[in-house]
Length: 146
Image (tube, rainbow, N blue to C red):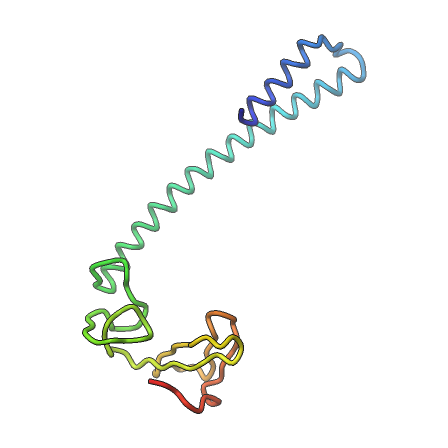
């Protein structure tokens, strides 16, 4: 039973009880039943709108996936996020590809202990750990593993 059906049931129950709508209590019950009916119709409209938006987002996600495959020239959904590294042959730890195609380096985050990968050409002096958002200054990194 959805919200609209429950509101209709309560309104019918009130009518079946033959509540006198001329009394103060009857006026109150009628106003509450009308309010519930209006709220239930609003909820149904919101549910329809949400359903439409969910379908639309799924379509956009599928279209974006196609664009990503075209831009990164990948054959499957395992596209990598490094620059110029989709035509790979060897093992690259920083992405899902299989090549030493990018100058990626790794360090251990002092905050959470996770390995953090970054591009050697990064213009920033600070990188942010994707796991814990700790800022890591590149000048402080002594031993950078390539």
